[in-house]
Image (cartoon, rainbow, N blue to C red):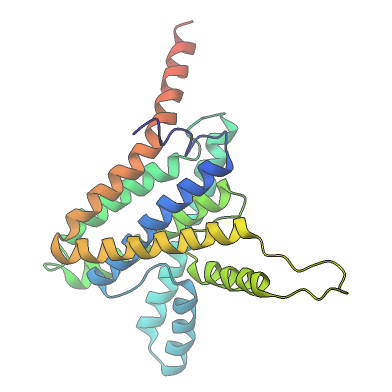
Length: 249
């Protein structure tokens, strides 16, 4: 297992590692988003919808809902900011686990979500808003990880953009170039395959998350957290060994 995931979160990147990590994180995002909807009745990766709801609720005079949606967007931005801080801090210290640090934090946040979920029924007015904020924070945290790693080539929660790019590339693929034309219109088949893979993984993750929350409950967050932890573990242990070796010299 460790041989297969080797290099997925290391600072020395390959295109294959980026795609594999992106596919796994898209699965996690889909599972968390769909499962979170069953838990709190709201999708937490859809910033477009949240921003639109702020405008709607302002017009309708729903101040509480406006503040709630604004808080969710702030939490998403906070997650992305946290990723930037952790990654840049790790890179400046030449840590192999620089990209794994946000995934460690995400795994902890998912476990907190799972544990807190068991108490939602007891303290619903308090835990549901906090859970929404936590899930939005997780989405921002995760999306920023793969965005930063792949230099904005891959995103795992922004399905609207992925589907748009799929449509653009399909349009290029079906375009018939006239013989007398200059530069031909050609589809980026590699980009098309990657985006189809990411959307598919998000969808499969959504199915898994919905089924998990329906039949298992909040405990289904544990495998997701373990998967993220395993991805970040190898480079983290490498850093620990190097620090110990330097200290013993």
